[in-house]
Image 1 (cartoon, rainbow, N blue to C red):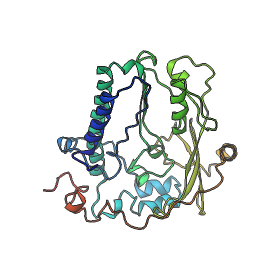
Image 2 (cartoon, rainbow, N blue to C red):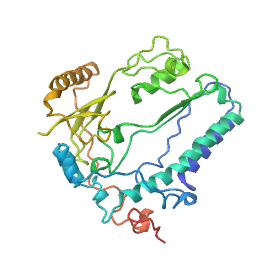
Image 3 (cartoon, rainbow, N blue to C red):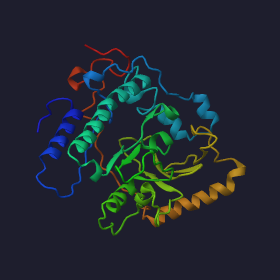
Length: 338
């Protein structure tokens, strides 16, 4: 079906039409996946320029700061690549600040979509019968560690928003500070709907914790992070990490470089690598052992090979030509092209 208008609005229209036209009172599962905030970021016309004059919470560390922090060489090398804040996507004059503004503007239509969907559920009398889950698929770096994009174990990349609403079931203002991963979403939805649990799953249901019942729920202490090297993005190595709590341990695989240890309580920006701190020898040994236990427990020791998609992306043009949908200089200045 050809696209008719702004795709975020259009996908939401389709979802609302389906809800209104349902002929059955049987339970349903709806998955609405918006592409709006996947690069490249193209806001709706009504939102263009919304944040042009707003200050931005972007802090790009200097090369000297990265050197002093003993960050791995691959991170410093990647800063000089197409995923670096200084050379974003190989576009001359690329501006992380402008890129972030486009991102925020694109999110506005997603926010409106969420509001429209929830309003429709209320109008149809379904809001108290429906579990509503809002989340992203990955974080994004806008200058964090001198990088853009994702594919790292740093907080900006590894964390995603997660909101679960169920009127009359989840107490208003309920907040969980537990370590939760995307592998936990399916078990939680199955639990909430009293459906049979998955036979083989590394995820945990946190439904009883959300509802305040606790039950037999025990929060995990840590979570395994995995990223596997891709030929299209050669500057980022295979990474494994232990996430959760105050300390983060990151191990790179496939090249000779520095591993990483961060104290998130005292160094939330993760710019002081403590991997060579003699005071942390026992902690590093313990967390490395923990990492391998997580890999063994999840059968995660085999590295998958991803298909080479080639050197070009048909939807992204280096010159940001109008044919690609972007006016000249779209991600370089706050001025929109004609």
